[in-house]
Length: 148
Image 1 (cartoon, one colour):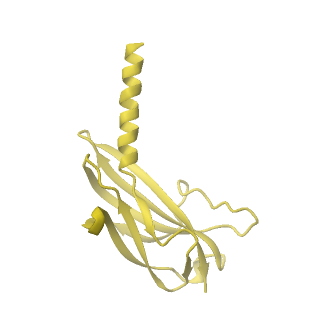
Image 2 (cartoon, helix red, strand yellow):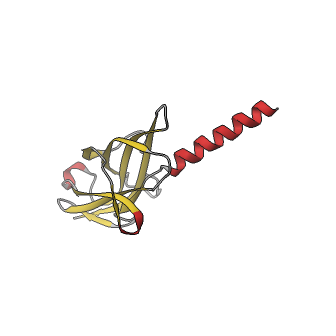
């Protein structure tokens, strides 16, 4: 019984550590409208943490959602859509102890999408944590609107 409690405690600590390292999309905000063939700023925020994290890289994609009555976009685990950026994630500390990096990206032309409507902005972040280290693939997404 004591062994099971120890394993459970270590598992909870590992999960809490991974969750504390989770990044999120600062902007655009969910529901914002992005226009075809136009630049926008994408911000990826990483929380400040006691445990170090070694960044490996990110991929940012834009995936059109099917036109239907349902408000469900495809899972980002299955596809990222049109890739807008791949490369290093090198966040820096800014005022208020925020750690983030901004990227200037361009929404592709309407030819890549079924037309104006909902789309999913997705970021896949690979980083290493712990002494092992352990690889963590993290997916974040928000739903935005695409317009001409």
